[in-house]
View 1 (cartoon, rainbow, N blue to C red):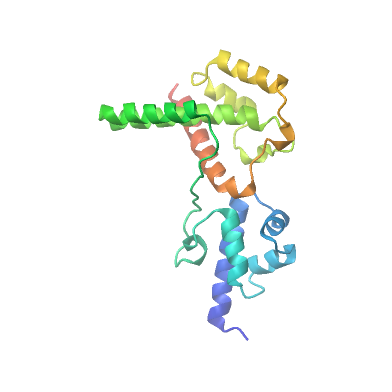
View 2 (view 1 turned 90 degrees about the vertical axis):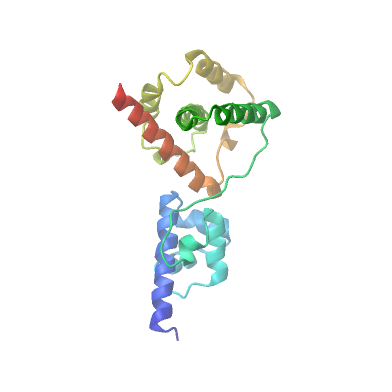
Amino acid sequence: MPSDEEKRSSALVGSRLMLIRKQLGITQEQAAKAAGLTQSAVSEIENGKRAVQVSAAVKLIKLYGVPYEAVFGESCTQPTVQSEQGTLPESFINAAELLFTLITGSGSDELSFVCSQTLSVCLYLVFREIYRQNPHNSEKIFSLSYDEALALGKGYEAPEVMQQLRLCLDSCRADKRRIELPIEKNAALARFIENAEQLLRAGSSLK
C-alpha cells in the first residue's frame, strides 16, 4: 500500500502532467493514443488516483517534449523543447547563417534583438497563412484572430509576397490535410505563437 509521501508525490506528478497537457492544447484521448496508453490510465495518473509508473510518465514526458525536471523536479519549470532541424532548402539555411553572421559582426545587441523580433513576426504571418489551409487545424491555439493578426502585421509583411504565397497555396498540389504539426511539437509552437503575438500587440501600441 502506498505511503502518504508516495501518494503526495504521485498527485504532484499527475497534476504537472495535466497542466502541461492542457497548456499544449492536447486532449487526454490524443495523449493516450500517441503515448500508447488508455485514456482512463492518463486520467487516473493526472488525478493522482493511481501510483505513477515511471514508464508511463516517461512516455508522456517524451510526447509533450518537456524536460524531466518539469515533471519530477522539486519545483515545476516551464515546458521547453529543443526543435529538430527539418529538411529545408540549403539557400534558406545559408541565408539564415549569413544574416546571423552579419548581425553578430555589428557588435550591436539592439540590432540583434530587433532583427530577431522582426523575423519572428514575419515567420508567424507566413506560418498563419499556411496553417489555416487545413480546415482541421484549430484556430484556438491563437489568441489573435486571423484578421487581427493580418491587421497588426501590416508593416512587417510585403503584400506582394503574401499574395504570391496565397496563389501558390491555391494552385499547388500539396495535400492540405497533411498541413499539420505532430502534437509533440506543440510546446515549441505555443511558445512561438505567444512570442509573435506579443510582438504584434506591442508594435500596435507604439503606433
